[in-house]
Image 1: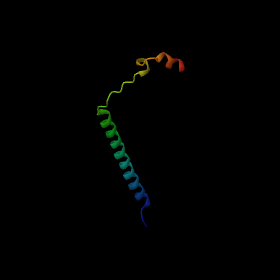
Image 2: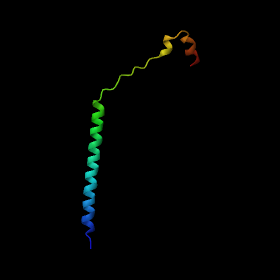
Image 3: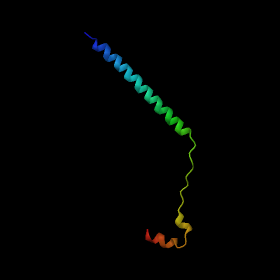
Length: 60
């Protein structure tokens, strides 16, 4: 008869190892992403540069 208790503990240990590998991979990916230089995006209000922007503001 198979030793189900031993089989269960072996499976649980391997599942725990797999979770550790996945967590480590996620953390490495996050670290790599945070090191990456991303472009700077500036948001401006283009309406202030247009003629007649006072009319646009009244419509808001």
